[in-house]
Length: 276
Image 1 (cartoon, rainbow, N blue to C red):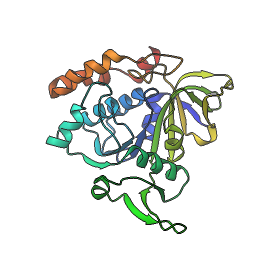
Image 2 (image 1 turned 60 degrees about the horizontal axis):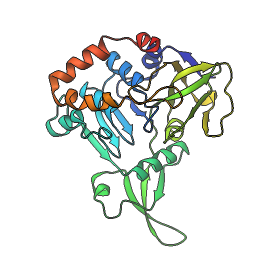
Image 3 (image 1 turned 135 degrees about the vertical axis):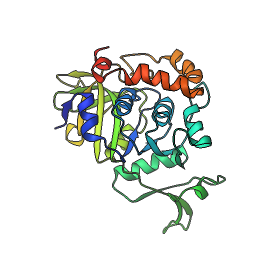
């Protein structure tokens, strides 16, 4: 049965310096509150994995906590570049950033292999691209049945996967619904799973469109209403489009970014976030 913890305690116990951390969520259910707690606790030298590192990883990179990024697309959705990400790549500020870039299909298959506890996955992909020449996690294999040459991608098995979901029950079973990306696969690929949720309920009601993660597979659950802001949680909140637009000028300037992090993250607490 998963432990129900405060966000502060869960992050402190289960995420450590040097860990490989996946923080997934597709359009909604992006675990911003957990990322902010990582920043507050100064957990550093992280390898971050995410199919679409958007503002959540821009903040972690700008805070100087990230050593390496494993990803398949990076940008501020609907707005433009991630300026803290670009500054790290182009100028090494606040520290150099190692990159392992893939296609979306490649990253999804890497999670599937990790969740299946297989060493790699195969797919038809990477042709016409130089991505395979820039990473040691893509190779080619020959199908033993047809002779076709296929791409092989190494499995990813994060030390910790962090996701946000709508509900958990008192036993730590988790339910999420709406636009679901690779949260299930990313969670099952990890050694430890931390889930922040909008609501803790006595019993999870059946939903035809939901994904349920059983409590025995999850390490810890933290009750964090609004924990996906500025993204959203279907059925609980709406996307803060103004924030995504505002992030562009905030993140362009180093001093402006540092002031924002100080006011909105470092001077806050996980308990204040949960109480909003």
